[in-house]
Image 1 (tube, rainbow, N blue to C red):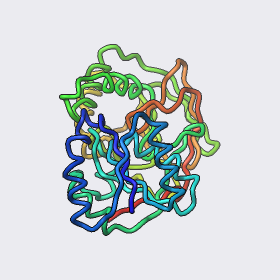
Image 2 (cartoon, rainbow, N blue to C red; image 1 turned 90 degrees about the vertical axis):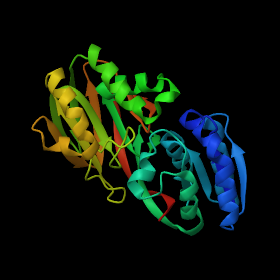
Image 3 (cartoon, helix red, strand yellow; image 1 turned 120 degrees about the horizontal axis):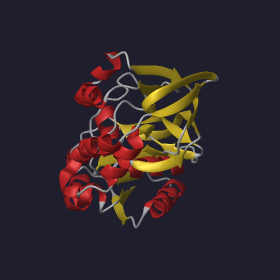
Length: 288
């Protein structure tokens, strides 16, 4: 028996649209289920907590934001298992781990996958599964979250282009495992996983199983050069540029010369200054 936790509004209603086919496919695979529709993130977390207490896998049909929110609950329950059926706009966790991004196809992983421990990230006590970022990314995420649902995963590109017009460089201090780095520029990201924003491979060497974060930051450059850089992120080629730095560590303290909201898995998760940590093997996930 699994607890199927569904955010019906995820992906502009995508999760609700695919739910009947997901239920049908799970039945065909012999997976017993009960479906729970979420009202909001706290409700989803309560459903996940109940599933863990009952010894049932908590299977999320939604986007990466709900995956991270459920991981936050399950990391406190030894033996709890999470499953992921992509139903959002970005679905980057599925993309990185080899789960089919088609939710109906991903049901095979729920039926036949193996529970594997994966790392999570932590921002001042709040959990994320993918990448936590701030600075220019704060503005791009805010705009993307307000964009029309019809844009699909293009909302992230739309958000970046809209944010570019008003952007002014910030000064940051990033302390990685006690070593300080100061710079002026665009953004700072702490990557538990490789991708965000619907297939942007910001940290192409990040590993969900290494107990480390890949810290990516981007020095000052002209808006024109930054605009030319953006398409290269989809293949992870931006890391070759001299303005882009990738370091690795288990704990990162970040501050800046002005306030920024930290976003992770598409949702706001904290404010500066903040401390970001890797939490090794924090939650078991059904993976291919």
